[in-house]
Image 1 (spheres, one colour):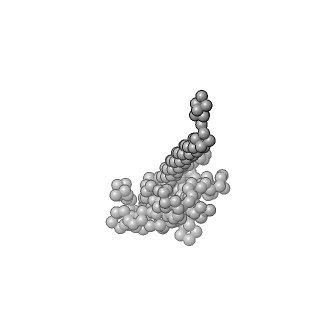
Image 2 (cartoon, rainbow, N blue to C red):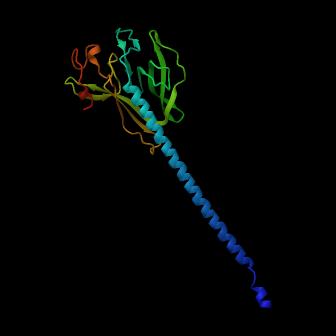
Image 3 (cartoon, helix red, strand yellow):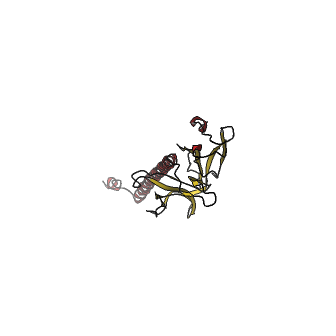
Length: 228
């Protein structure tokens, strides 16, 4: 009877070993849960960034495609109407705005690249056009993307043989619209990839508004020539 009582319970060593194994199992489970949670958060953040870039590209493409041969202002030196000002760091033009962002009608619009706290930022701003010029901005410039390492707007021209010319980081023929605009961009975070972006302006290179400095007076390019 005495021997049976001695073996009826657990020893202190057995209890300590069991507790140690239990704690180790808990640590392992918590580690797996934390890793799964972090992986989920990373996946959600990546999905949000991808969705953001798709939305930004959609806005860029729709607004550039709707650019109008409507003068923003008149050049003081040449007296020519300015339809589009294109540089490596910015592009500005006049076009319609979607109803969810504005009141409708033509708006002066500008996409530009400026220095921010986390690198370059891609911003968008717009102002309603009137016969006397654009009104004051209704809201401050909106930051579309940040954390950009380097970026540049580029513009496609046509050569003297009516073929697509080289890409350039400045559009010098401000009295007309370029046929194509693209945005090359790299992020500071190399895991964030910017899909290739090229937008065709519906009324691009409408040289019927004046003589063409590239392909002869009165030249109007064919639509198919712009996308080859």
